[in-house]
Image (tube, rainbow, N blue to C red; front, side, top):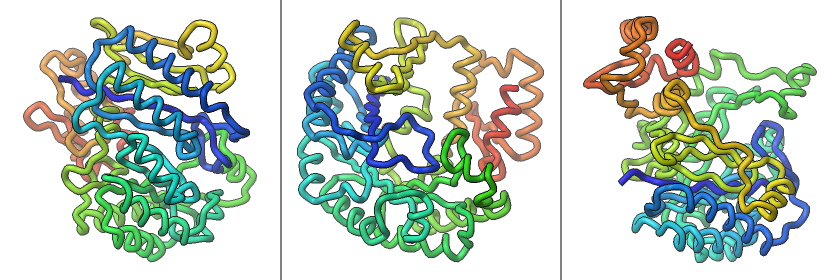
Amino acid sequence: MTPLGLYVHWPFCARICPYCDFNVYRERGVDAELWSSALIADLEHWASRIKQRPLTSIYFGGGTPSLAPVSVIADVIAAADRLFGLDDTVEITLEANPNDADENRLREIASAGVNRLSLGVQSFDDEALHFLGRDHDAASARRAIALTQEIFKASTFDLIYGRPRQSDDDWYTELSEALAFEPAHLSLYQLTIEPGTAFAAQVANSRWTPADDDRQARHYEIAQETTNAAGLGAYEISNHARPGSESRHNLIYWRYQDYIGIGPGAHGRMTVGAARSATKALDRPDNYLRQIQEIGNGAEATETLDEEAQLIERLSMGLRLAEGIPLYADDVFYREETRAARLRQLVGDGFLSLDCGTLRATATGRPVLNRLIYELIG
């Protein structure tokens, strides 16, 4: 049976990080009962429109879902079970900040049904954490990791590399400290300057200069070598795991499978009848809540994706995976000679491999994947 996931977006944060371009808002107090009712109503709306099958994953992202009332988390999980059923091995992940990792609260979150916690550690260096706008220090991060590993069946944490003034030795040191926790999963993200963020404004005003491409590339290679040596292979460009500990929810995205999105700004990809549909919820929390009260769902748009749009998404997501993506005999690549020629060229140049119908980015191609995708779909 094709996997089905559920993404729940909690849009509130205690503070907004300067590199973040997600749909987030400052938390100023929430009505737990109102949010439970709204999220459940939105979930009921989608349950009435798609083929019923057990959920293999639920992911509470944000924002900072560890700030959400635990009753909201528990209510959504219970509604998901009632409406769809939960797979026997369902993965239920919640993102958390280290400052929210109070032992009692973490145990309450686990009792609500969450079995995997994702910590936004970002760095073990206090100066770097201050630069990144985080509200925790390195000591809090270390305590949070230890508590998380004790309480939850599975866990992961994030680090950000390629920061200005971060040396190769600094990055080796941080990776070594991360691996000393013997994590089963680790996410390592390159710092990118996204339009509209505080960091974008700072760089535009010459307040600081991002790391150059050569240093970013070295830090990427350091991450690959160090994690591979520790047994955490890069199953996706930014994600490393021991075999069997890969994120089930994120694999749904990268394998271009079905997932429902609820909560302000949430996206979904679902098979509705014979069509592949993209969904998006209203961004602003007040608009989202108002529309649910008025018509019973928070959708801003639902779009049927044509073959071209699906190809672009399938490539953009699937080539991030080490396992690659299947190409079929009737794929658009084989019907358009221009694209077929580009594909042959990129394979011949060693950026891609095509073996037994599976297309993969090579070690040479993965660091320049965005360019490869542009070449393939342009």
